[in-house]
Image (cartoon, rainbow, N blue to C red; front, top):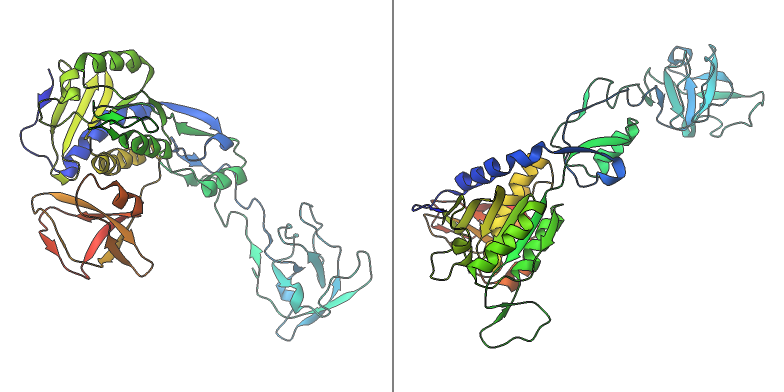
Length: 405
């Protein structure tokens, strides 16, 4: 039998429930080619197998020199054989300067590079020509990238849990790694419920509304990197919903439903999950208070409320941050402090989440009111404004925490 929590829990406590429920899924690890790892979460620490760069090299096109050969007044040096990138140069003889290209190895004996634009003449002689060049003094290490100056062999290159974007994959490639261990992508069944809900594109009869939740959550889940299976809209028939869940449960790692979790007379998700280890209750949050969480036939199940803004806020406040923490993907939302462009009020005993537009001047303007049906306001927003429990009112210019969408 499902359980009912009689007192609202905090946002943090409900997020803890998500973490505990989904933690076992993070143990599934697979190794994939770098090209398939974009947007995934790293499942184990990666240690650098070599120095990066692997050898001392030139930061500039110029002349490799022995710094001791060029004093404060500069010096005239013989031009040695040029050093293109990708070659292994001979040692640099005293009193000579070798034309060197960016990224080419520093020859033995050299310890500095003078940029070509500081040379007289400021151009490279023809290879093999008997030439000299006058160069100004340069300290040891001038425009030299030392071996291991980026990362040394044996150091941790990336920690487990890192979100793998282009920069991270570029580092792994530079270290010579062709594969990477990542968390397996969870398979999610998304179910929208409601007799009143109609698929977009179909005729809208009196008393019916088009389904926004399915598209909202499907988009959010896929954007977070999850593998989503959607069913058609499930009618308010508990037996039908239970059969649908039983059919798909063996094929997925997580079930997410929308609607049917409140205390009304026709709450189909509550009715369909009777006999399963699921808890229904309220979170001290607006919107998104009614929530369900537990397991169905051993599969984790999350019951989000039915209003569009409520279900998306539930995803952003609970599921997305826990996925980022446990799986390293998606990347966490950027959190900033911003000044309110207008005053607001909030229920003091609830954590309120308002939609807002964050401007380049560091202010945030509220989009719409606190209502959970305001999809147009949600579409205009680029941020979630967090008003914590204990706050009844804020004035223009007050600072708030903002999650950038």
